Amino acid sequence: MIKPALPDDEQGRLALLHQLLILDTPPEERFDKIVAFAASEFNVPICLVSLVDADRQWFKARVGIDASETERDLSFCAHALLSEDILLVPDALLDPRFHDNPAVAGAPHIRFYAGAPLSRQDGLAIGTLCLIDTAPRTLDQVERAILESLRDLVLLELTAHRGVSDV
Amino acid sequence: MSDTGMLKILLVEPSNLLRRTVAMTVNSLGTAGVTEAATYTTAQQLCESQRFDGAVVALDWPPANGLCQGLSLIQQIRSGEGASAASIPIAALVDSCDAELLQILRDCAISRILIKPFRVRDVVDTIDGMRDLARLATR
Image 1 (cartoon, chains in turn cyan, blue):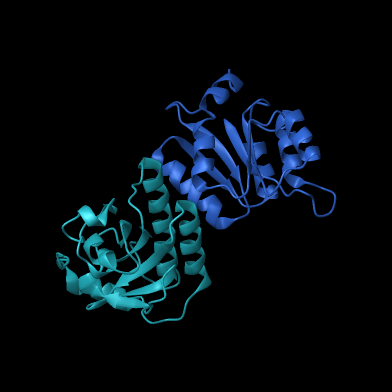
Image 2: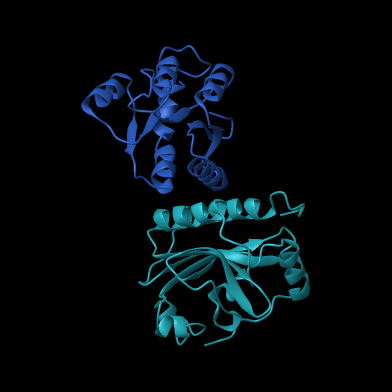
């Protein structure tokens, strides 16, 4: 397993995340609806709005998983923060970053992962909207565009009424 | 159709999540430009003022109080009352489809019927598939 590197501006990224005042808040229908919609659209058992904090990833909305947070070092989403594009892992067992990750070797037995970074225009990413499946698969161009659209809707909700601009 | 060849599509769908996701996806793919209407009133106003190459209309069937506003909108387009060509391709989004509705939709020359549960992908592909019919309609 390869631990995720820290983004270039980790302090700025964390400051933006904390400015949103959303960590450890109760579930909200506006996010729950999006993950339920995405899970149905892509026919995946797990879909998350994952926010990557200093040492953990915390789930603002989740389908198909009971845990509300996991360690950052084990997080697929922490890897997804490092790119502007969707992180696509067609088969985690074949990927050196993840093949021996506990979430691959054991429950929930992740094989497929697609994470769209929740990024501001300046590149600061606070988390992902991600899809997880227990079987290998991939996304074509249209499916990627759909995931990006749903990601953009999550971003709009995250910044609504918060006074956080430029997202 | 615009000078760039991009289809101009009217999407009438009350569900914000479905409507917004379809519109944002199609617009980002660049295959068409989607104008959104969350209500039939807005859609009718848009039809009067703008020329569309195709339309995707959610139908409130069976109608709650005897009037199916979605069908009224489609019939308005087909009668040539709006700014668009009367023969533009129109797809219908429905919760269910009985024999009566099917006959009405056939009479309205609906090009595609999507019955729930359908995916965003199905609507995106339907819009993409309107290109040839739209060319014929706008000649």
